[in-house]
Picture 1 (cartoon, rainbow, N blue to C red):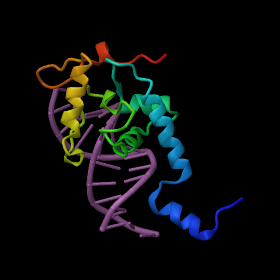
Picture 2: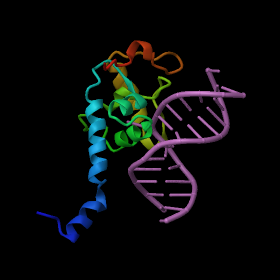
Picture 3: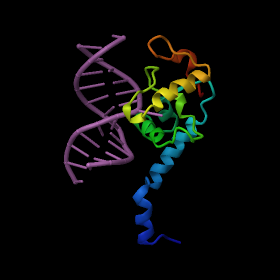
Picture 4: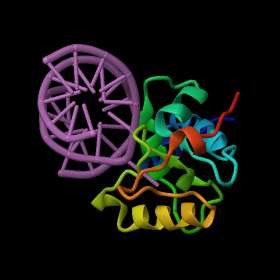
Length: 124
DNA sequence: CACGTGACCCCGA
DNA sequence: CTCGGGGCCACGT
């Protein structure tokens, strides 16, 4: 059975295409596998989700998440420099991220960086 | 349709 | 170590 025109229009209004949703789902699935007390970089997640070179996409996918209610551990994803990516768009969610990580025992150096050698998730 | 923007990243200077 | 440029691509205007 197919959707009629009105239905299609309705769907495309709010949502990302099916293909896009599938991509985001793959990203969330990878993020869910990062264990407590470990972190992964945006680029690392992209690569694992078969999206090598498209690290920005991971940022977008996580941006869609509601930080308060999501079951995806979005806070375990940081940038390749070992820092939390700060942005006004996040409305404080970035600072929230740091506290969540600290609750998991992850330490920040005086400049706000995480030692990736120590905390990076080794997925292989 | 064309730009501008950005929870990114790598590389070279 | 920091900066800038190029690449990437979904989204809003």
